[in-house]
Length: 418
Image 1 (cartoon, rainbow, N blue to C red):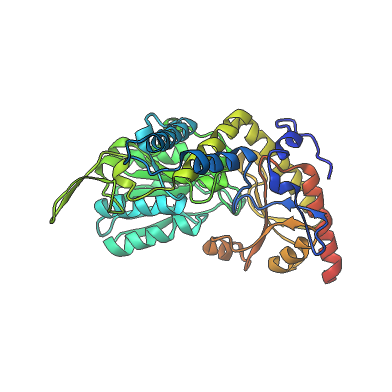
Image 2 (image 1 turned 180 degrees about the vertical axis):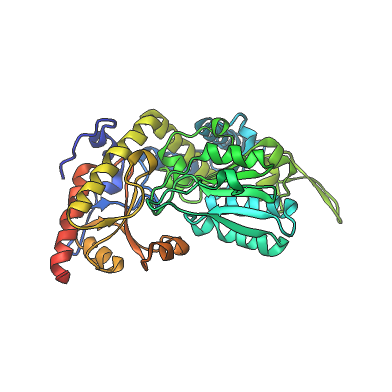
């Protein structure tokens, strides 16, 4: 497959770093892989694969425990990974970054360790209808446990969030938490995070941003955004699965309770009570995903070398191209059409062919898309569809792959007689 040159990234060079993109798939194993499901999980460059392998081959030991060489090396690599991730998101102090398995664990940590401490009956948690289940279900649990209520920011017709009522009580004295995605995994919508943060803080509330889709695709500075919490999924940003973390303002983290108890998060243990370490270690019980976080640091350095402004520009280019090509063949593309207001998760409905059927037919051409509700069932009901097909793009995707998607959709149309 030829690769159309991007104005912002050298896609041909980048693709050489991803061994899986050399695979041939399809019924007879001869068609090139066209991977368009990076919103679910991204592929990993050779540099990340090598970093994980190197850790296990040369440095494998548990951290914060041993005084021998391997243990000290592993600890240094792990803490260097924390500092690397902190710099990437503009965190003022590495101690404000807690390692977790990703966004779901991070959100649950805040829900249990912070929200349940501050919420009282009648308090409100403000969400949006865009939210992934991982930024909805934990708040349902918190509300049920405390008597708090969930409220939802409505959506505008184009799929952006509607802040018409922001000055008229959308965020008010009863609001204790605002929990919103930084980028929708379905519509690509980019909410105005700083605007929401300012409004939340003016009302005395805290704000958590689900950064699963945002952090991999746009430049992020938590200090400039002034968010209280940001969740991070490493596997969506070229890192290993079960890597990621939670950023929190120091004062927020210090008032939080640990979510997990056990080894390494303690200072002193008595038979009846225990005291805990300082942040971030009081939240990192047991043996952590050491190699995975070391691999994530390598992924962060890879993205930093590309330049996140370039990553974002490439995504705008390919999203605009994909939207135009899909609409040319009669697909209904959901979400904002202004690429300045959206990311590269492009959900669509094509010719009344169920997305699951589409995905299976496209797979015979080696084209990998997501089909389903994308862990956003309330949003699907709002859109009036049972599911959508979704093509999601990243640094290794090209315009030619969009063309391959379109060509395969046309074959599906002929196959189903749609």
